[in-house]
Image (cartoon, rainbow, N blue to C red):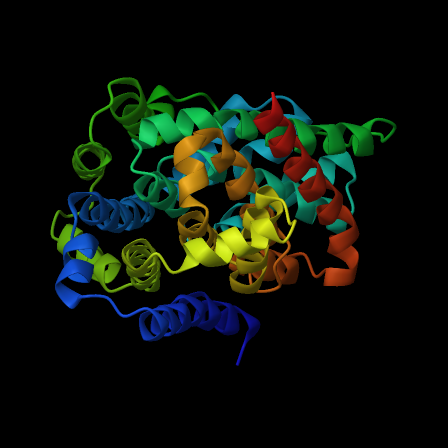
Length: 381
């Protein structure tokens, strides 16, 4: 079995095993369990995850990968920006192995800066994921806000400083690597075209305005933007039903449903409260307990929403008392995902740039440590 498949199996198997164990140790009335699972909050989260997948499929059907490449060539004059912008822009569109999509564009930009394969890998991989802390299209953000019973806009606002911190960490590395390097000639720009620029950025900008500025329900905002893309493109509307069906029965949807059911089991049985309290009474600080669970679950599944789904319910009482614990817990789990050998983006881009774990770990681990420490500092201030 491939490592990517192992990661997927683990990301579902771990919550399922926990559900079985928790229900065996602390049985709960089935009606109470089902009423908790089929709550409005959970239903909204599941619908949002499905529509995000439909949105990504719609953008691909409309040829936005090619249009985005053209837009980057039109706007980018700086060689350094030309190297990091592709992965940042594609990062706004969550998709499996999304870092692989931007890899050829980043590779081209990095060639003008004389970057090694390992450093090019880092730039593509790191900047692809800077949005995952707070961008409302990511399943981890949707799931975390749902578990905390908080609006996505509010959760995104709390998490947003981490996006800037992540950008600064990656940019600092790039500036350090290219400080004394002689740049090669830059590829000529593509003639500016307002139509291409509008088509590429309007859907994402509109989604941002509807969901985060006006506070419109994310599901309604997604539907508006999805149909806008159909109107702007030549893609037939019948593809919507195909994309919807594929998204409903996707692995991502299965995973989200599984971890949400685990959340419900934990809440209704209350089984982890004594475990958590005993660990705290033993002298282990609560933050170490929560972040430890987050990091381990992120590392062994390679999927952010799996880490969130496992760790946030365990630490839910602390999160309710202090929502600013969320950035620390989320970042720790996410950094576990970033160094996970089961992370699909890591594996596919590692293969694309023909580098090994031995080559990439010395480059990727220090920034992940910086991000965890930064999120801890963010909590303390």
